[in-house]
Amino acid sequence: MRRGIKLLEEYFLYFMMYSILGWIYEVFLEVVVYRWGFSNRGVLFGPYCVVYGFGALILVALLWRLKNKDIRVGRVKVTPVLVFLGIVLITTAVELAASYIMEFTAGEWLWDYTRFSWNFQGRIAPNPSLRFGIGGMVFLYLLQPLFYKVTGKMSERTLDIIASILGIIFLSDVIYTYLIK
Image (cartoon, rainbow, N blue to C red; front, top):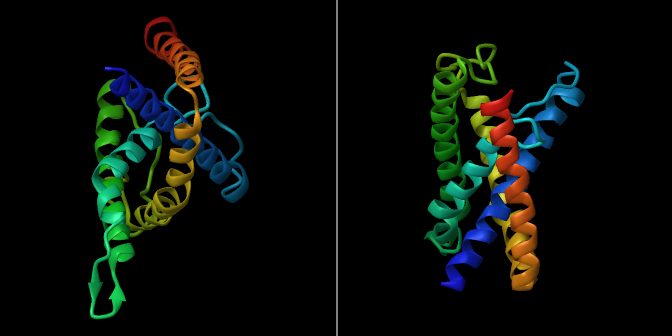
């Protein structure tokens, strides 16, 4: 039973870390790259984009084993290419689904890709999908192994405390955003 709780807490921390990193990435694009100025890029009040958190967990669930395989064509290792293609397909599907969920729940979604070639209803496009592929490679090959090490070194008590505090903050934000605001 304790192992299940620990695993749930670890994955909740991963969800929060990637949601926050996603928010930072989105704000960076808006402020530094596109120079549009600051706006909260998430659907909640706090500094997190939950689509990045869910997307990261889906990538871990679907691609972690593939990432660790040694698939070759002749002498050339093709595993990273397969992982990259998997990331592009999965993140594109997650983004498309998220746009429909946001439209259903909030009446709109937070991005517009109509300026990109070959976009679908402004919801998805190859350009951002390829960027998500690159970001997903950084995530799966660099960040997630680091996060595994960090959470693996935490005591059960530390993990309980951090997950509980973040859980209360996140739940409060959901309640504030959808029930009070």
